[in-house]
Length: 273
Image 1 (cartoon, rainbow, N blue to C red):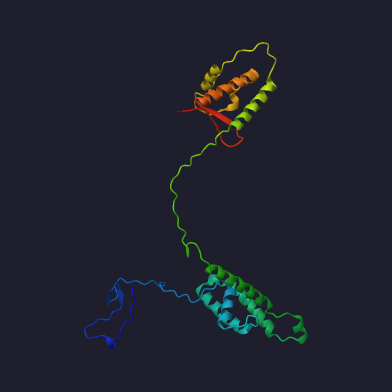
Image 2: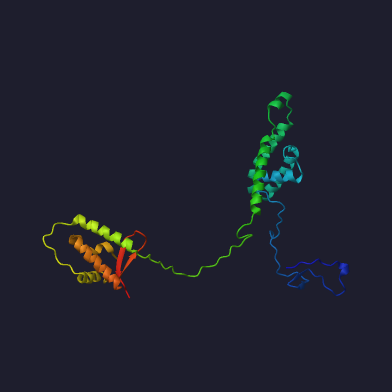
């Protein structure tokens, strides 16, 4: 609704109606019959205080009073006026303010009571504790205001968000070097020496037959550890024949060797293509 300043009765021409307001560009000359304004529709906020110290600091700043030389009598009078007003409007908020009112009354009474010069020198200023609390609150309030002025995400800054396109990571397996393959074979030979026993006769081993056995072992297409292709009981001859059979299968592109990372175990599988 857009409000306009109503013209004076002298400015209204004969036959012209008084405009009460402009609603979407059209003049309203009569109050609607169904117009209802709730009692609490208009609420004016003059000052908002976060506590008794905030109210005291406001009263001190408003009158440009030195915080180190507070006129307790005048500040107490103004403070109690606000407390009485608040008690009549919001009784539930007056409790913490009454504690400060009692403190101000105590300080006021201590300052009004006559004291000898010796007692005055020995006792501290009755306002000292209140001044200390006000200075500490003033520092924290100033720090809070400085922090509130900093740019804030969602209020002053907007962080753009853009969903990343769907991508599938393809893990590249490292190539197996000949040196690592020889190291793995040396480990197998070392293990074969540990379990080798005396044999009277040796059974002839065929590289072609061992190639067939390896392919049969890998027919499921899964990964098989390289060291499991060797049988310790066959001794060095069995190790050499199996190793030659694996090399021939690699040469003929029937199997491939896979290693996840350097010095990791080597696996063998048949080539799907």
